Length: 112
Image (cartoon, rainbow, N blue to C red):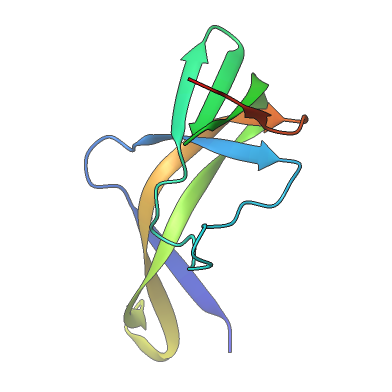
């Protein structure tokens, strides 16, 4: 059965940056990355730096060819156009991605 998605933004969408990392990112204790802060992203012009504790990644910021929308399923549905056989799924729009940060090198260790 086909479904239709209804997408709404509440207010102005948050601007997000896609991270393209050429390595594996793991939490030290092996826990999931979901909802965790992985570091501090600093942008200076087209140069970007991702600092994760004593490790630092340097990369470049690039515009995406087409923007992306980060969406989350809400679990809510309703009949489409009053037809109970056609359901519309509600999605929450979390933000728009127009740029990506590309990190192609290994992290550098910063010693204080």
